[in-house]
Amino acid sequence: MGEIQVGTGEPAGRYASAFGGLDALGLSLTNKFLVSITCGIAWLLGIPESRWIVFKTTHTTRDGEAFRYASTWQEGLVNGVVNFLLRVVTLGFAGAWIFCRNERFRLAHTTTAEGHRMHFPGQGIEIFLLRLFTPAVVLLTLGLAWPWLVVIKHRWLHAHTVIEDPRAPNG
Image (cartoon, rainbow, N blue to C red; front, side):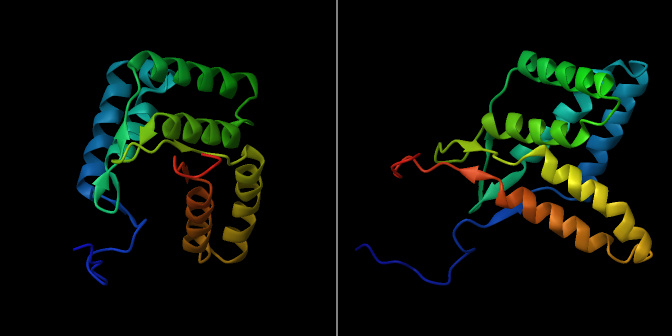
């Protein structure tokens, strides 16, 4: 009656990717095919990026339960067009802010299996500084620091992914 089993399964809050390299390769190849048959229009509209967002979200689990993603294709299209316009107007300078914008969009449309909403408070300037810092570190270490930099980016991303708890006073 009400016993807690200790040491069974993964620790609470553990995230896992429920896809392998072949799944990612298949999506990548179909995205490239889609871009090529539309003469690049699919890329301009952010369709491959949207497909990655949905794939990454629905194939990520927390405590063995997959996340749920609910966005219409119209919302994804608007997001892609706005991102494209930001890239063009800023000559690509807004890449870090677009990355954060995509994470906010993805998490705004994602819920856990229990129905908890998610959000992303990360700022573009933080990714911009990391991207500014990355080439120098990679060159100085002859590429040996690349895995370390990837880990830094993922830690930053996970630290800024917030699952709202409806039982808490502030959400």
